[in-house]
Length: 369
Image (cartoon, rainbow, N blue to C red; front, top):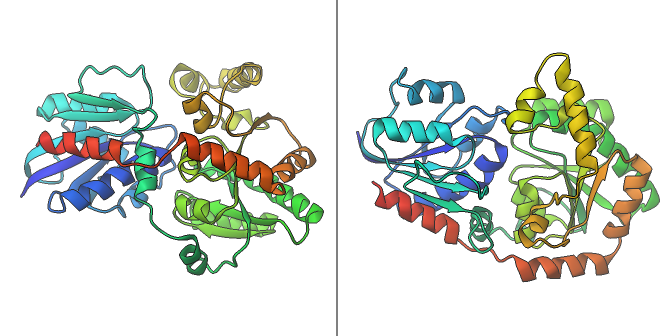
């Protein structure tokens, strides 16, 4: 029997890879004798690889799949680890499951969120992401690998790589891959010998899927599979769709462009009521297309550094753009040291890695034991 245990509720690739990994790393350093149990909850954004990835984090004793989490939360299955005291830490997803389990088992509940409107009811304490107190800042502060070591580790030459992230969800990666292979081919044709593309493959993408896609569409570039921070540390410039990668890059001060292709509205996953409506037979596809049409004309910021600073620090490009149009726009940045240096400086002025958010959450959870 374990005297104490930390339970972490989370859901999808971004939260697991960024928030949960950071908390686990700090917790294991501070309290190595107290095991961590990661309880994954149902989520429309999940890739199916969350359990495998989380099992590799420091200090993690057990990872519970979403179906089993539901059974445990509602009392249809026993908890897999005996303990005397516990704390619950909510790190993304629907807070209902963590709140219900906390209430039913009378376990203190602490949480982290990027949504300012999330109700604090049911939480003993809730930390809302803000400038200077961000779990992504904690993740980057804990990252220590040097670029030279990483180049050696991945067998890469020392070049100014342009890194492409096509998404950590299999359906996004599947749709983006053929298009971006053509973009890379076009850019290499225009800037042969001075453009060095590198595609980052998320651990949430199965190797079989990557093998099938490369066989079908070729490999006009190098690939790097593993920790996204490794790829960003190597890169001279990042091209990515919206998501947590934009937050990682901003704290690592890596210049980037954020893209939102709207060619495939069926692949856009909405939360809340729009997400449910989009799944309706016959009507769902049409409703999703309608929402996308509205989004095209709504002013909004896609990149997390732009959202947090309320400034246009990072260029954004959305719409139904073609290979040639996108290639030209990317090359304007990839081939301009001045543009990249200016963005790098702006990011460094706004965002500084620190462990404040992670330390606060670990402190709360330990005090709750």
